[in-house]
Amino acid sequence: MARSPRRDLLAGLTVAIVALPLALGFGVSSGLGAEAGLATAVVAGALAALFGGSNIQVSGPTGAMTVVLVPIVAQYGPGGVLAVGLMAGVLLIGLALLRAGQYMRYVPAPVVEGFTLGIACVIGLQQMPNALGVAKPEGEQVLPVAWRAVTEFVAFPNWTAIGLSAGVAALMLAGARWKPTIPFSIVAVIAATVIAQVFRLDEAAPIGDLPSGLPAPSLAFLNASEFGSLLAPAVAVAALAALESLLSATVADGMTVGQQHDPDKELFGQGIANLAAPLFGGVPATAAIARTAVNVRSGASSRLAALTHAAVLAVIVFAAAPLVSKIPLAALAGVLLATAIRMVEVGSLKAMAKATRSDAVVLVLTAAATLILDLVYAVIIGLVVAGALALKAVAGQARMEQVDFRPDLPGEHSEEEHALLAEHIVAYRIDGPLFFVGAHRFLLELSEVADVKVLILRMARVTTLDATGALVLKDAVEKLHRRGIAVMTSGIRPGQRQALDAVGALDLLRLEGREYATTPEAIAGARKHLEQAGLLPRTHPRPHRIRKAAR
Image (cartoon, rainbow, N blue to C red; front, top):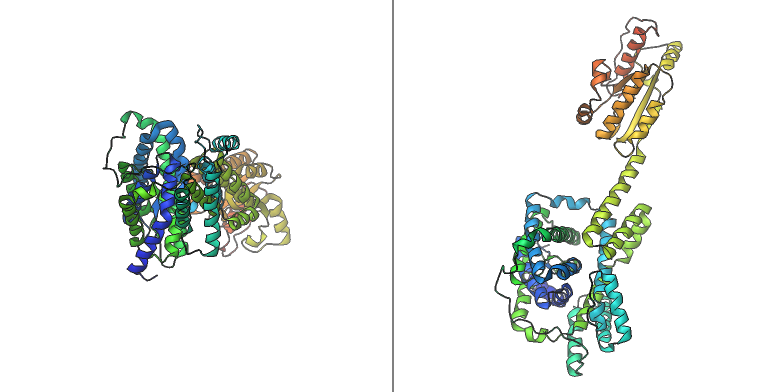
């Protein structure tokens, strides 16, 4: 994409118009007020654009972060949230220095989709008090709080608030289908504000007074005695900021040609942003997928667009605070309700649900955990379940089967010799991973080998071997040895030797000279063993060439 300063400036202006009601709404939802959302959008938006790893990403307050912040505000107050943001910034810089950004690619798609669905549900439920025009009930759990708000509305209905919120949400959703290029969020908010002022709708509570500018930077909120108790929330905030920012950057890369983000630099930029935002009273920030998408679709190609977005919002903070303060809270609730609905990609959810049963389970479980527990626990649960199901699937692919060793038999032999050798030698080939999930069934199979004198394990096709697999192999060799069965191996790869040596699995084989590079060599060794045991007649060595390719 060719760089064009004019297009970047226009894209930044467009994003600022979209971001204004979202910044106000997420600030109010977090519990720190609209001014906190604006401060975050200005300060974090500018610093993340300057120091981040993506040229086209837009950062600020987000719904996902708000979900995490609400219980922190309830427990520790506004000062606790600011301290958590500062600590999260330090943690994000630490993750960047550890080069942890590269691991984002390992998050499975069903976890991301379930996470997004759960966030959308939580954001929508969080808006119930403001959308219904009732005071926010006490509590941290979003479901009980939303239910109490509904019951209070039924007892004392506020039709003005619900009318404004429903009207704003409907206009945004319908407008997005009709003219996607028009920022209907700001159009709807302006219309709702004008209606509330012209008709003097006292039941439509406004945002309230906003400061005309950013406050002076301060660390007055820090309380060293609380650091220990705030560490866990800070880890949750840092984890969410990292996950959402890197996910947003990946999505942005996919929407453009030639753009590629640096994940570790992105973490560093988000760390700087979260270090600075609390100094000005801002909530913890992260990259915003929706605003980034608007930025890309508006033609942005450089950091100038995101910087312009922050600059425009700063001008609004300084010049238009009295006007912004008159926006009804119900209108902002309508903006966030529409945002939550638009976050749900029905097509993607259907695709994930139909892909495999495991994908459907991970998606539903992650979404439910997001709604019932919190976002970080939800991602952890989703990753653990997805990992367990993946391991189960991989382990199911591993197999061990008895194979005919005749094609690898060195030299020329008569049918009688073939039959005699087959009477005393059996060969097994292990295909796939030999690791902790399914290794013990191999031990059971090997332990039940019929009464033979030599067992050859062909290991060239073992793809993965961990300590459990190595121990299982060692146990099998020792049990067979006690039964008088000689075990010989072929094709052990260099990468597998560390695990085998660590548990002593190769000691007995080396001691008796029963580890071979190829299957033909192992068969020759087996024949020699049988000759020494008097089970085969000694033969003069025949000239032959061992096939090195056979393992």
